[in-house]
Image (cartoon, rainbow, N blue to C red; front, top):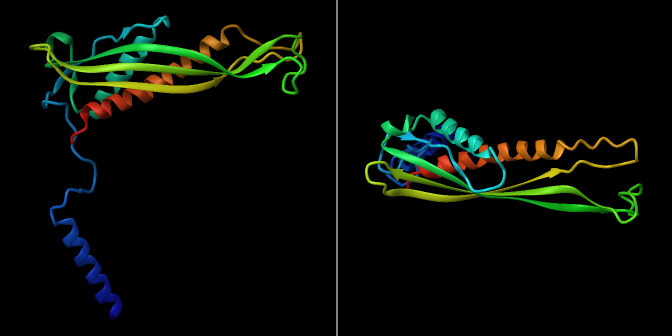
Length: 194
């Protein structure tokens, strides 16, 4: 009998707490674009780096996030109420975990050789939401990402498999992953309600 009363008591307390009008809600809060606009355009990002072609991946990832969320419809620039304008500000590659000839980690390297075992990839992007009618900036944010990837490794002479395209390919794959992560964050920050 006490178990039934305790269950009823807990149910009543939970009901009172959930209906008390406090600021917390169960589930996902409604999201929208500042100003409540429903038609947006996402022009191709500007690329201020020396890494040609990466702007397409960032643009496509942001469009994909808006299409997935259905918060706003992505339309042609001439039909949109607001535009999401992006710019890739910087891309940096920093060698790390260096291996030197003669060390236990690289015993077969020629004398005086130093190789980077990893590269750190640092990337910054700026995104703005601009009203098309008058050019007013409704929202802006800056996003930074960092990833590490393994460099091609040289072992014994004649047995190495260093591919000169590996580093470029690895760089591009990591930039694509960063584009996905950063544009998800950009979408979420643009559409969050306070």
